Length: 516
Image (cartoon, rainbow, N blue to C red; front, side, top):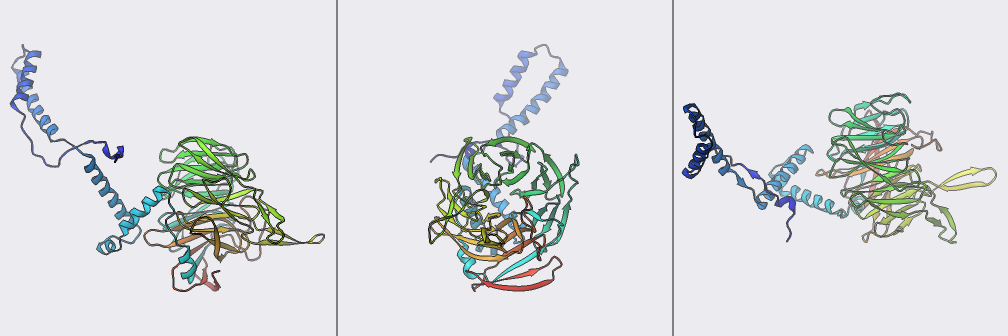
């Protein structure tokens, strides 16, 4: 079996003991002869200096003999111990702690298996059925702090904090347990130069996997990098020529992908605060981007109706054509045609879903150029009364998609009053709606994550009175610009209720409904 070169490379390591082995007589005589040949006429002072150097050489030789070669097996053991130590520390950081009782629960084994499955890009969590059958209450909290519509949210991997951003250019940091405001990065007036922040609408947010960095992008064509722990501005990138519409961090590194309305994708090394390269291919504004573990990313190109899978190392791309027509199930006549792909979510390294202006959600396999399954008018129809033509039905288009990575659960948003949950079929060739949660307003962004090892599953939703890219829709009746958080809980019944709590902790009542 071939051995990974990472483990075979050997390096010298010193033993911890201080025992010194005297130099052999042959080694001493060799150094004496060398000294005599080079300086036969030396005086007594030079001889004393030579003796001092000889004593020092004895120590050097002793140290060299103490140095040993670390074998590949020893290095594997050392790296494994270091990795297990990092897992123990992460468990302690999550507030779970690490003791003998945790060993019985196999938390470390579970984390190792999870990391291995994710590195291989496999879908390994089948939890949608548990959500469908066992959740009785879905707790909902509302965080209000923005004056204008909330356009983007970002949830940290450990689930301790999340961020929200809005059209006013500000970013708010929230505590995910108490839902209290922790810090605010204010926005600046439009056109202000040399401002550490945004001076126009913010369109996207992303948090690095290690929780060190927050990236934000907006209509001011800038990408700002913020320190999560120190709450300060770190860097600003201004290479894009139009609005920055999407940001995504790779799960295993601080490599950042940015998508823009200038039709390009750019790669950044955030640790080095450096630009890497630009990817070209889309023929219209890029409206969304996502990535997982591998050095690849997925993007959708708006009205060019394509999704593209970028292979960074191979310097190639695969193109998936949208523009799918929805047909009347009774007559077979074409009803709605997909004119734009507006959002996407990657499920694992081989599957993803897209949504667009026709209300259609499509499931894709990277090995096929056409969707393996499509659900038309996923959020229903919007009826508008017309004096000349009567009632006009148009689909609620899909404004946001998010998946619980490497699982069979994903969610979608629009402005029909709900976010909807879907379960992927066992053969990964179809999906169906399994429930919906009330959200009053336009859903501009969604994030869903399961936190390890606590198993808490959070859904964070950016809600606004209007769409983040325009004002074609304006909702006023009781709609508030806010961030809404749902926590999925496992119980023994199939009923679902949502308890809404405002930012001050006051109970606003409970509404009940049943999972489909």
